[in-house]
Every structure is written in structure tokens, then in C-alpha cells.
Length: 131
Image (cartoon, rainbow, N blue to C red; front, side, top):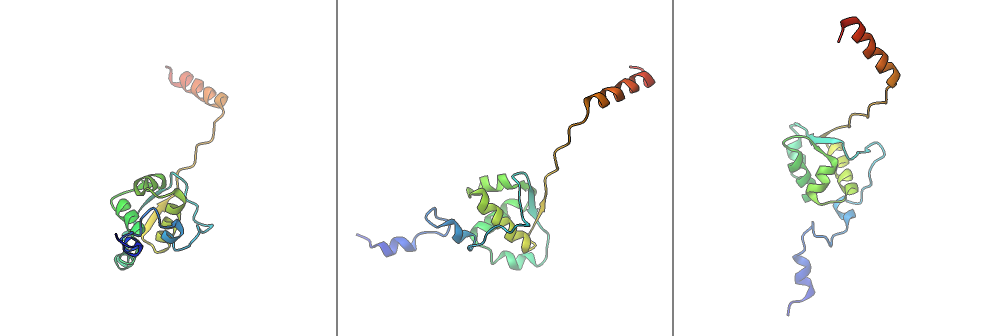
């Protein structure tokens, strides 16, 4: 029969038994880093990033591996890492502060245009150039 101490040594840092605040080092999401689901992130090409990347947590390293070859949305990063979206946002904020990733905000939704104006322009083009 094994004692409980040996079982505790076998737990990994990414185990589901580890509280999520341990993954983020107790950090909260800064107010100026609001990541939407569709915000795109990719690895930055910084020379000093290699030294900082060696000191990352396993979860942050996993995020860096995911975004190393191109852009992924915040939702995709959360899906691939199996971490809650809030935790991924905090990890991304930390990585962006360390200049390891670049975040591109999503394109804002287009405003609705006046249908009458569009119809008038279309009619004018038809009259001018024939259709």
C-alpha cells in the first residue's frame, strides 16, 4: 500500500487538481488587455524572447508553441489548451507584456447602411452606364 505523499509527487503542474490561480501566478487580467474571442495572436520575432521563453510556465509555453507558426484566435488557443477562456486571456496578457506575442484586435463590424441610398446609387449607375 502506497502512502499519500508518493501520489502527491506524481501530480503534474497542469493536473486538473491544480487551482487555476496557480497557473496565472495569482494575476488578474489588466484592464488595458481586453481580449475578445476573435482577437488574433501570434508569436513575436523578438531576439530577447528566447531567454524569456525558457522561464515560461508549461501552460504559457504551450500557448507559445500554438501561436509560433501563425495567427490563432483567443478562442482557438483556449480550445487547444483546454484552459478556461479567462485563464488564456491572463496568460496572453502576460506574454504580450513580455513582448513574446503580438495581438491583433478584430475588425469592427460594419455599420448598417441606408438601403435607400444604396438603391439610389445602383439606379444612378444603371442609368449612367446601362445594365
